[in-house]
Length: 152
Image (cartoon, rainbow, N blue to C red; front, side):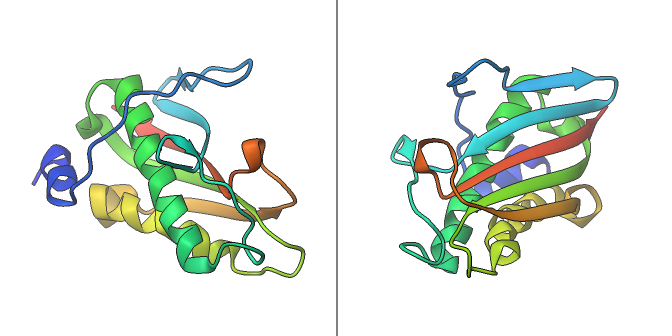
């Protein structure tokens, strides 16, 4: 099964690349690596606002991280034209807007990591990862994720 079929099976429609909200570009390709800028969680086209441990729980955070991964895939497709060119998702870095006592950032980030494995399979979708708790994110978003992919 190819990537487009997997996305269809999962009921995922990739969004167009979002226009950057500041002075940066959505992606940079150098050699066989594509670096995707951080994407914030969105719900109904707006920033998915909240703080884990205060007004969002881990399950909601996982849903937000999954939504970010879908946006990242849309940007990755725009960067390379065809997701079949992805050799490997190399690295995911996740920032989770959380209280000082919240300690499940890694579980929130699983929402994105698991989707990437569902889409690309374990061989290409499993990746190195970091998950950080931060005091705040742009627009009050609950999650922001960036991604590095190796491509053909």
